[in-house]
Image (cartoon, rainbow over all chains, first blue to last red; front, side, top):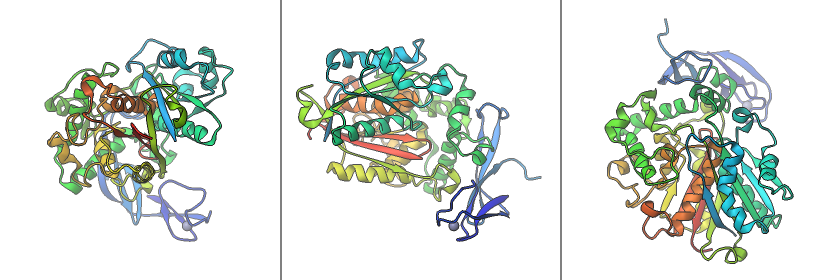
Length: 73
Length: 378
Ligand SMILES: [Zn+2]
């Protein structure tokens, strides 16, 4: 899972930002392992997605991320 | 200080009328009485472009109402538009920019199918989070899982929010769903976002609500029973759900609530209208606002304490859950309910001796929140 990490303060973000909370605008991409916290099956997803979507709120180090659920095979 | 001197709304639901006629229906009683006094019009509306193919909606509506000589603006803050619009109206009155502001909240959503509406509303989520397929309802499910786990809360307590709000909605002639439901009905209705079911989410509604606001020193020349805005504040949080360190900390709600209560000088309100887009939100918001004890809010629902005759009545109108959630109208309609409660005009839903109340108008999933504390005295 790619996380955007601030080159100045080291804070990680799932969703890219233009400016970090510390004021820096320089980020690097970092590949991290994830650990699932909670998963949800959505049976009425937004138009344009499959009939059923499963996604998980996971942690990637100290950063929270969203990823598709289901088997990791 | 500012007072609400008149208020009205349309029945919410799937309505055949246009956006313009809905706006007319809620504002006509106010315009008939106070046309000459109104010197600013604020339209609370979020999705006229997406749902109705209309831009410049404030001027189109004010012209339809023959108020085109009066300056107007549109306030859009997604689901929290209504609270934001009233905050702007209050600021105009406090600053002397205006003397009588007509706020019209309106939305016509039934032009689209459910999954298309979900797609439009999900556009408030940031692109990478959205790409997973999440929607605002599914965030409520994540919150539910976290709440049940952390506080060892009972699943049926969450569903009891819907039972209570449908009971109140059944007594509200303006509610979208006027039908009582049982706990079993709620738990056995189709799952929308596991574990939350259809009855635990607000329906897709059309509707409009209007308020007339004036400065407090002029209020008695409009009505013998003004309802005063005693405190009002807004809080903000990240629009990225992955930035929230704790899903159960609704920081925008907590901040807005603390400030609004402080400004109001009120220690405890007699009732509250909250943003129950999903059942779990009502509980977590009530805890963030200090209305219910943190981590124990669910227990109040098992004990009936949030009912109209309970010690902390919540969503006497039926809430978004039963009354409906026409986005731009919702926050305005919450204050219409508060107006009627404080004046003792809420009929079967009347809270005994209601002298102060609170409304929470919330954008997104707590992206921002506006809290208004009202009362029968300045
Ligand atoms: Zn930084």
